[in-house]
Image (cartoon, rainbow, N blue to C red; front, side, top):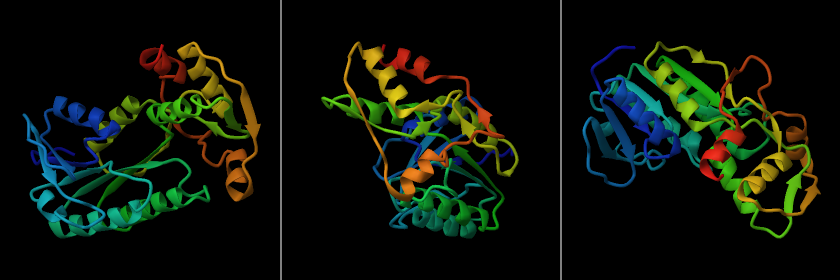
Length: 255
């Protein structure tokens, strides 16, 4: 969609937003970033203070905006925050919503995924043309998890847990493409090029750091364990596949 109005990016100061905002600027678009802390605006990027979860400052942030790229998310409350954003967007006459979600929203029996699904539904039922992209776990988050695990004397490795981590820069590039295009509803998932067991991810990190740790296989109980063992968090068919591997990411960030 072509427009001269600024694109509002929620979560524009996070990992994904840090890649998205420069890409939008490179396409000649002005960007308005919604943030909870005040920041000085810079060339082509305006920072506005608002809080989606508290429903504060959103309407002012949407003034003159036609396109919203919704990246903001947290451990909980994403559904409520998104409903607040959607209501304000409806009142403001927003013409296009783009949302980044996560693979497994409609299959994983965890509150985090249910919250994401609630956010997806709020956008889909808003009456505003939209695009939703579900992505796999970012390499960045995977690194945070395995680096913490690797500090333990023995690394716990839940059996049956598999992940297909994707590079956040590739997700950002796809989101910018979708944002500058036409609304497409729920588009194919975006995954990394390989599926890894948790133990493989940990071993790769330890090797990159030149460390060794014993590993302890453990079994996740209950519905969550069954869902992970069944691969409900994966997208093995009809997904768009990125090119950057976990090994390449580690080589850049750790090795």
